Image 1: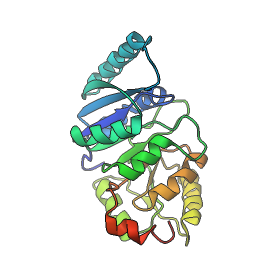
Image 2: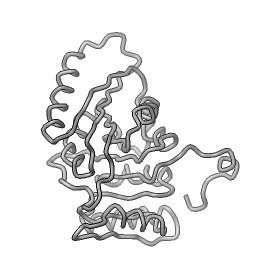
Image 3: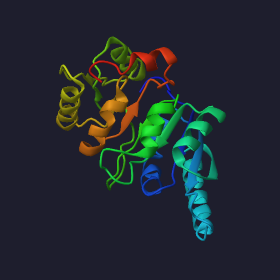
Length: 239
């Protein structure tokens, strides 16, 4: 890969899947240019006492040591409350370049945390899949699937992969968002892609992808909060 994309990352390691999934992908962070990592663990607000705090801190120290071995500085942040609002707030406060989460606890096409992030997060979001086995060393070294098909998406992909010896991307056709999702999923299987690029209409498409695929999703460019004018205009056609 040519340029380095993200210098700092906020990684959600708490919850049902994050602690088991996100650390498996630590090795990709240096490839993306990440030098500083903030590990975030949300403690459910309903819990009166945290009996496993020692185990949680031990896991955090182990993860920080793994990051240090990869050349990345890290810190562990514990907060009580729902993860979505905390991730959104911390991403702004810490001024990170990328937010990383594991898959939802259940793949039923909905996730309160992911939905919140897609609605409010103003940073790129990397959603990592579950599953077993080692993670790929470089998310952008394999084919990229562009499910949007816009000139902006093509320009984004070309900038991400600038200087790569084997740059390639797949842009499925389809007139509707649903058709593009199905074609994108098929392209992922056929090309052994490891990342889906969703520059537009991500909120409408991600639920289908959560049910259907086990590849990483990078939702970018950032999704800013909608303006009053855009809220009055309603949803984007085809989204």
